[in-house]
Amino acid sequence: MGSEHDKRESTDSRIQFDWDHELDNGWTNRLKFGYYEKKFDDYQTRPVSGLNAVPAGSDFLSVALAGLNRSSVQANGQLVRISDTNPDVKESDLFLSDSLSGDYQIGDIDNTLYLGANYTRRKVKDADGAALTDTPAALIAGGFGAYVYDLSVIDVNSSVQPANQKLAQTLLNDSEETIDEFGLSVQNLAYLTDRLNLLTGIRYDRFEIDETSTTYYRAINSGQQGFEKLATPEVSKVSSKNDNISTQAGLMYDITDEVAVYASYSESFTPNYIGVTAGSTASSASLAPEDSSQIELGIKTSFMDDKLRFTAAAYDLTRKNVLRYENLVAYLNGEEQTRGVDISSTMQFVSGLNVLASYSYMDSEIVRVSGTSTANEGNRPYSIPQHKARIWGSYEVQGGDWAGLGFGLGMEHVGERYGNDANTYKLPSYTVYDTATWYYIPLGNEQTLRLQAGIKNLTDKTHYLANGSGDTYRINVGGPRTFYMTARYEF
Image 1 (tube, rainbow, N blue to C red):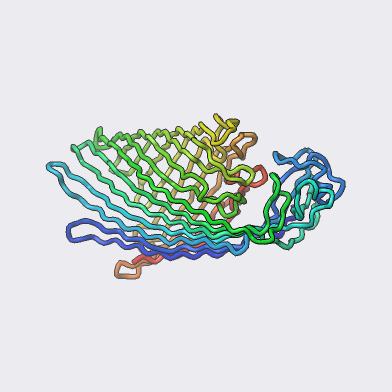
Image 2 (image 1 turned 30 degrees about the vertical axis):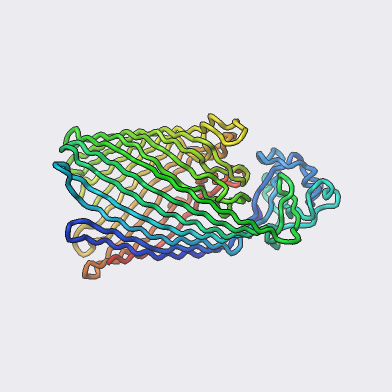
């Protein structure tokens, strides 16, 4: 549609070290640390609105008088676009985790204990820019300010679109955010009898968020079409700290050597971060963290000397303070509930041949909405499908000159999803296929080089992954057919 300048230039870097060491007493220490960094600079022509009528001209005043329609493109095919950018964005994660696990005995009861600690420091440096133009004189009195978006209009029903020029960008704001996460966890598995096991655990989490943001141009009306330049940039600093203790417990009973049933309860705690490209002016520090709890009942089976395994589980998940977006503005759903069923199976009937299949059913509902409006309560949260299925098969040569050579082919199906919490439209279901081949090269002294190549979205299927912002005009398109190669050195 004439948006040939849409692009993102990015560089990803990652280094990670994993070290497992078995102590003399049989306990195991696992240490992991690493650093991940992503830099990108993007420019996009972004659809923002339909029009109730065909504008008399292409200038901002003519477009405004035609009547902006944020809900959808109308039958006249008129689509309004802006151009914006996220220049010189940098995201980095420094992470460290260490754990100690081993067996011990209390009386006649055998136990396995896990002790773990983790730390992550995440830094995000980002900015927002947009193409602006002088506000028409007739609109200044209406509170639009001195600048407005430099709009372009196309007719989506037309096979011929006007040339799209790359427009100069004005820096609206920038920010730097530091997020520190620290956690301690303890888990104990007690073998109460030959057939009954009890798992208990407790975890402590602490999150600290500090953000400094600078605003150069301020949006001055609810639609954010108008801006004013600040004589002095406005600098704001926000910070928040959250502590939480979460617990878990589970029981598993082996009915026979092949069949076991279990029941579990778990809690979790996660801070809410605003995405760099979400477009919201709120800060992560202003949002309450998400906490959740889940009850699960399930059955696990193993037959034919573990060649056939089957697992089925039913669960009830409650999430509070769930981060959502509507027209690029962040908000929290006070409570969401999902009741579902997960089924999975693994099959290894032939040496080297592995098949994994899974299916999920999810019945999700918005129970409570934060704020005064209750219009979406009872609706299904956007981007959550009711059905998902996946199957992956692989074969690896077990002996001979080609030992270590493997092939894989898989499929994933995702059912239709609503595009917003108001449930006014749906994204279609899709099925994509992936394939891969790999080869393990032994280097001696327990060193191995794994080379892998593959194709994602083998049939080049056009599909829509999700709506990450709850915005009719901001729907994420799945990746096209993609060829990739990787190398992994193990020592």
